[in-house]
Image (cartoon, rainbow, N blue to C red; front, side):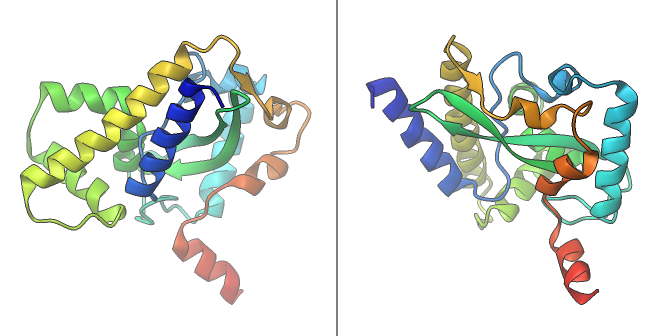
Length: 201
């Protein structure tokens, strides 16, 4: 495996180890969730219907933190990578609360940390650490841990964004015009409470 691909693989493994539950989303430029409608080759109505069904399956709770969503939920994607072949694959769909969605938004959160430092940001840093099992009361250690995770993610995204041969492995899977939404929702990450309820029923 060439040096760059090996470096990417190593960074990706470190990030998954440091942030196993909630981590900044790595999507090369041009493939973010705002472009999901064009990637799906679908209408806004189809995407809204997909989001509505996903929200029903999670019982109105966040796929990551399992908190009840009082504010508008957001449908988000998570991708996995084969760095040797330079292929990205859709790993799962998630319905996220506003806090988890903001924490997965790599560039937006980095901008926020550089331009503001308030109680809301402190709360988000605490949430990121708690969900990933990094327990410390030291605010400096907490900030350094979060900074390291986001720096690794940003490095991976920057390198991938400059790889012209990057491909999407399962783009056809996202074609809502050719697939039932139930097929796509088969990769929806359910919160623990929804899994428990399903097992009881």
